[in-house]
Length: 396
Image (cartoon, rainbow, N blue to C red; front, top):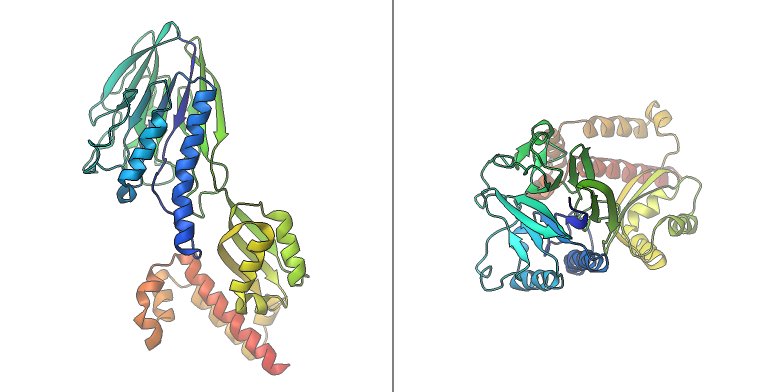
């Protein structure tokens, strides 16, 4: 029997840049790229501090074509800080590059090939099996579980980059079923690919540690790795520890009853310093107009006062406190609200056709086609609120 501890991480996406950030430019992208390497360095720090017996990395070490020689070298340097063995399987974002051979990993690192491989490691007077296989270089379909079976009488860890029961995304990338992972003699399935931290099963353990650094507005909350404790060939501890440099947060604030200073003060209380924020403003009131007309200035003030970065601002506000009642009227505003609702409820293609019905908008149709459905509908609501503001000014 073996008593030991190991680190499980996945989806490092080293070299990756921020995605879905509507503002901030190259500086934000550079900072996001640095953040992933900083997060991995903290994982190594924890492994050293805990005297972990081994580390497993379940794919997507790099972020596809964003890998550079400098990124690979920095990763190899971090691995060299460990005295313990490291086992790596590659994922669908990992590519073999022209510099792979000239920037080798240190001797404590083993990278699995496409075919399943079983290795036995002697730890603290016992033996542990580590099985793994890498995602195919050609990106073709394959059965990740084929040939994966643990040895009898030995704690077994399987390292794979796969999608269990279509767990949230990309079912075509290494699909497999939880039912097929049972009764294979594997005690801990160290898997990667899904960026949301998830313990799929505890019998046997099937674990996604999630990505080590949030990369876009959907990857909110703490990111990091697991420290797994094994006693008597049984998992006795599964501790998640956060290591991200940048924490993504969703913040929602209602503008009703607030003036500009009151709104900013409310955001100061709810936004964490140093975070990357998806800010959504809701409600109705006179603040709607200045927010729409002076959005950049408002964002700058929020960032200065909170010490955060506003990656995305979504205005779901309205100038009318009772929009539903206004829609039931007979004036121009009522007709406008009804038309706005009808347009926003259109299917995607009809919505883009409506937005691009003028010559000027048709010339940049590709810009609108690149937006997601929520953002397209926001544009409709933006236009509605803008026109109602103008109508209110004219009638005042």
